[in-house]
Image (cartoon, rainbow, N blue to C red; front, side, top):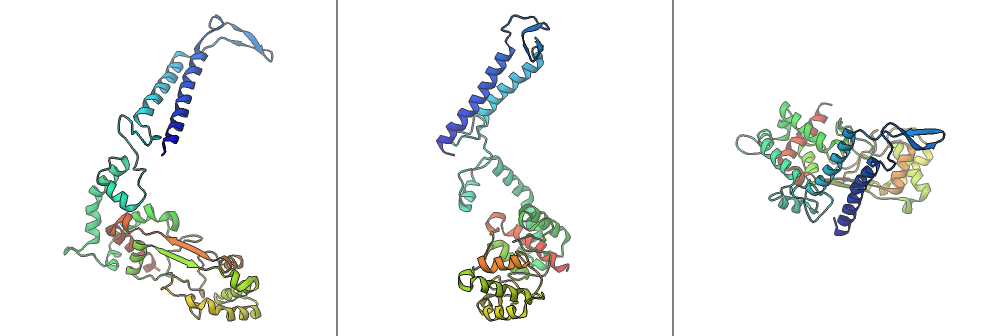
Length: 319
């Protein structure tokens, strides 16, 4: 955070705290010399107010809250980038901008986040290694780990913590996020391929064809794609789309069955990543798609990825 925002937030915070103290002081002061319980010398809408000051315990609680806020603001000044307070506490290292910097900072950082991460690694790191490695020190085959109930449960927890935000807690995905519980795979469902996907991530690009095909061409190709998936369509329009499909065959194959090498989906089944309605298909052909699967290798480490891959692999083996 820059010095400007530090000063800005500090000033506003102090104004609010001091303002509350001044307001409480004024509200507690009896400037009319009216005894407690007697009528005040003013009326509003025919109603006369009695002099009933706040209870002393309530006023004391307000003063306690104000003093606590002042102490807290200098003990944990999370809004400043120049000072961590007299307790030297920070939630995390806000200056980190890359994984390399994060790895370096982790060695010396005393932030709460890093302390918790180090404690978790010390406590559970051995568990991950025990489940991921053989007695000889080599990685177990993912297919073998996938049959280990305990290992799969650990992989499931890793999935819920890191992957469920996109793929759902049941791994069935959503619009733009693949379903991992079936046997339909963009890049292949082999155990090592799944691990590679998690470790290195994926970047799938479907180019936009509107400038090349035009609106009529987009409509015709979409009709042919819908026909490939078994839908009843206009046969003349589908034939025109088939003639244009040659441009799509480079990735999806001449029969539209897709290619794992490019992450190009199979268009002959009824599995749709971005929706299978005519509108959705036309939008895909017209404007293209850009899907990103982030790389988790540096974030989780290979031990955890090994268990995570085993869990994902096990989901499709149940089908």
